[in-house]
Length: 251
Image 1 (cartoon, rainbow, N blue to C red):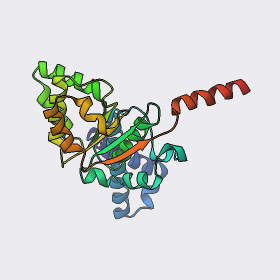
Image 2 (cartoon, rainbow, N blue to C red; image 1 turned 60 degrees about the vertical axis):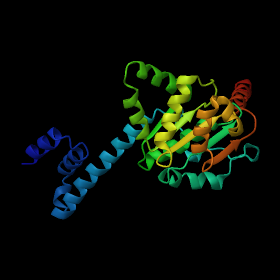
Image 3 (cartoon, rainbow, N blue to C red; image 1 turned 135 degrees about the horizontal axis):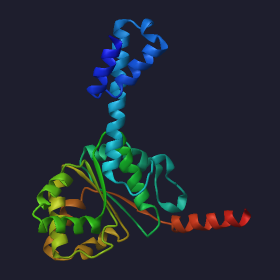
Image 4 (cartoon, helix red, strand yellow; image 1 turned 45 degrees about the horizontal axis):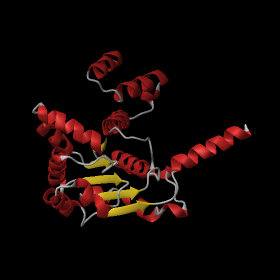
């Protein structure tokens, strides 16, 4: 009977329950469980396995630039990163409320790493996240529009609990990109959270977007209720290279 049960568990893809039941049989623990305890153990094993696989799918689909966590963040005084603020953000209440977050600062100050850390924290809490380079996303959507598939892509983006637009404004927006950006912002406004990282200060985004009417519409929807973090200090990548060079010279 146990062999038959294991076979059916495998065929039904109970990938958590199957190894748990097999381990219980092989170790003889089935005799030490009551019926209720055994059922609870098997269901809990299946639940934990499905939660783990769901998390791994979420992390893979998010396509983060960095594997990062909030525990790895550097709160050095000259960075402008407030630990209390980050801890509040790590609860992901701002995502639950559909609030936007802007992370600005010079190149190398850790904007993308911070966005990745918060995004992966959101994944751990069960939110759907998409991380993308802004210019690459616009290029992808323009090609999809040429093929008549951009509405499907926009619908996918709209369903993400948190959309991370990295390197916003590094490349200027053309007419097609501006319209697509407005579509994205309009779909998500007040319903889903958008996290934007940019070297350009928020006050200059209007110029970066271009076309006054569209820029006004986009900025009106994202600026007023946004949470903002501005990072300072020297490039962390440059600092890391310097440290590595110093270590190599010692060795």
